[in-house]
Image (cartoon, rainbow, N blue to C red; front, side, top):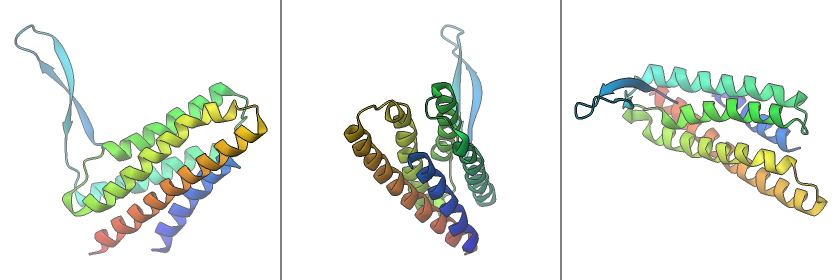
Length: 167
C-alpha cells in the first residue's frame, strides 16, 4: 500500500511542480462495397495481471515525463507542447484501456483523473502565455484545483486497483 501512496504522491508532486491505456489494437478491415481500407479499433480486454502491470507502467512513464518539468522553460512553447503531447498520450492510454470487470470501479476513477489531467495539460500553453498578474493568479488557482481533483481521482483509483488486485 505504501508503494501506491508513493506513486500517487509522485504524480501529485509532479502536477504541482508545473503550477508552482490503452489496449486498443489497430486492425485493417476491407470495406467490401468500395474496397477502401479503414482502420478500426478492436477492444481487447486485458487480463487482471496485464492491467495492473499497465497501470504501474503508465504511472512510471508519467513520473518520468514529469521529471523533465523541473527544467522546463515556460517560455519555450515547443518544449511545453512536447511535454503536454507526451504526457497526454500516456493519460489517453489509461482512459482507452479495456480493464477487466473486477477493476471497473478503479478504472473509472483512473479514467476520470486522467481526463482531468488532459484538460489540465491542454490549458498549460494558454496559462503560460498570461501576462496579467491577476489573470495569472486566477488561472493558477483554477489549474491547481483541477490538478488536485485529478490527483485525488487517480489516487483513489490506484488504491481501489491494488485493493482489488490483492483479493
